[in-house]
Each structure stands twice: as C-alpha cells, then as structure tokens.
Image (spheres, rainbow, N blue to C red):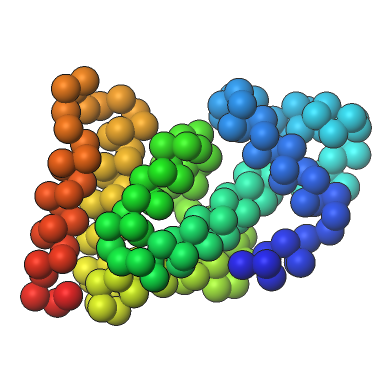
Length: 177
C-alpha cells in the first residue's frame, strides 16, 4: 500500500504520524488540530495549509491505518484463516484508539484513496475462498470479538482464545469455504 504515502506531501506524512502518535498515546480526545500542530512545533493556522479540517486529519490517520492493516492481513492470509484472525486481533488490541477511529463510525469512503477499502478486504475474502458474503461475515465476527475485547465487555474469566477458535472453526467448516 505504498501508493497511499506517495500521494501525500512530506508535511502530510509528518502530520499523519504526529496525529497517530497522539491518538495512540493519549486517546481520541488528544486528536485535535491544535495538539497536532503543537506536536509538530508549528502554529495551528500553519497546519490548515496542509490539512483543511479535523475530518481530513482523521482521514489521513484512518487511511494510513487501513493500508497498514491491509499489509498485515495480506501477509497473514498467506498462512491461513487462524493467522489472519490473529493478525486482525493483534492489530486491534495493540491500537485500540486507532481501531475505534477506523471502525466505530461511518466510513468516509469518499475521502479514502481509491482501492484502499478493497485492498483491506481482499485478504478476508482470500481466506474464505473468495466468497464476499462469507468474507463480510468473517469481518463482522472478528470486529465484534475485538470490539468487545478492547471495550472490556467480556467477563474476566472468559477464554477469548477458545471463543476465537470456535468462531473460526465455524468459518472453516462453512460449505462455501
């Protein structure tokens, strides 16, 4: 997904990196134009020359994250469904604020680079034999599991690894697969 970064200016890449670091370190409340400008050592009005508003700022971060996740899933998909699921879960658990920004609100497809969403979905489809409906079901399962996990919704004694195994077994046994 290197083509995403090639479409950005050097300053936009710096802005995206600073925004991502703030999000990862301090959570979504820290993701403001003022905080990003401060992290870069510039005044907020200078930031607006490169990123017109907070939506555009968030889109830079989300687009970069989708590209990063697509690469991780593509690598994992070559090893099969369990590895793909592990990569998805690891990404979400390692980057909970970023995962929420990517997935807990409507996706502004109109602002994403062309082909990015398809690239991030391709590995899911690949591990279920190309069936788009089964791929969507797999994504819904994985998203539900990681969302409940990162939001602390499972009981403390829940065996999440066993729950993942059971869910993935259902996909592996699917007649479409």
